[in-house]
Figure 1 (cartoon, rainbow, N blue to C red):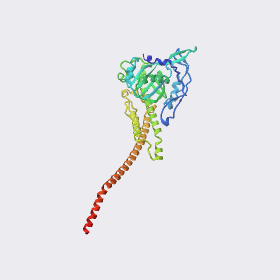
Figure 2: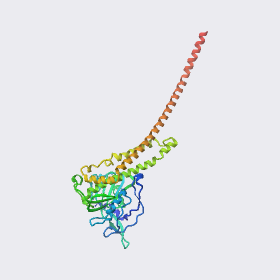
Figure 3: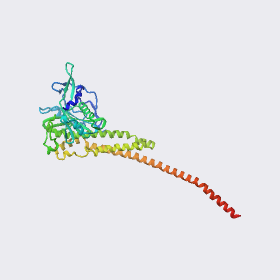
Figure 4: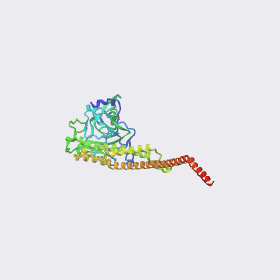
Length: 407
């Protein structure tokens, strides 16, 4: 079984994080980077017998990108109905530039993993957590199962799995199987929440995804796998969960690019000052070419990769309902405006590097001119030295001829 591959997690103590004031968020308008910086978490009592967490959740999470609209979800969070389930997390992690899904699918054949549109879908994800009973003994408690979508752009979206559990699960899955291309030094994260309520319509309200009544698909046979495994979450909202997941994956992958561009600009911020102070670029030709290549790589990931940030995925062309869910999440995460902003920053960085390259070219051209002048001077000197004896002979010959003519 799929959970059998991760028995090592049984020895790790996991304390669910349900604290909503334990994250420090960088200002949204400064860099548009949504990074989470976790502080120490308070332990949460876990009931092993019924596998439920004894904590009431009414407050929106602080480390969500949708926090500007978080107040819109308070009415749902505070209102309890018989048909409404518990509020659970949706954690999106971006750990690399790309995942190799084909070999990963081969590894996970025995766990009912399958391709769902452009993602590798894990219908059941189970994690183990250690909990101390009243007698002081250590027991293993299994959380309520969730699911995961893994995308080729290096992102994984976990439904119903806590952040720490998702990190360990993903690290054990992708790193040990060697399917990461261009792993990041520090992963990017997006975190929202969802609740299942059959009496509500499926929608995004504030920072809360509500999974409820969904309209039927126009062409279900083109989207759903031919053999659909039994999921841990309701099958009726599976397409909606995929649409929200793809938008979250795009946003998290874009956050990774934003981080890279910000770091690049931070390193290049001293170049204009150095240029104005010394009149020299301060970088070699090879270094500038490498920087240009990095910027082109950023731009390629934005516009040219199959899962880029500008094109509408083909799966939604014939599915208006899923397109609505995808656009709703994309607009809430401001993917379009963030893409334009990061592209403008890349354009500025390219122009800066182009100026440096032109200065190097100009300096190189000036040196070449001096070298050519020196070579001409040397050639003239050598020619003059070589011709002096002949000129002297001609001069002496003319003098002798004049003297003979006088006699």
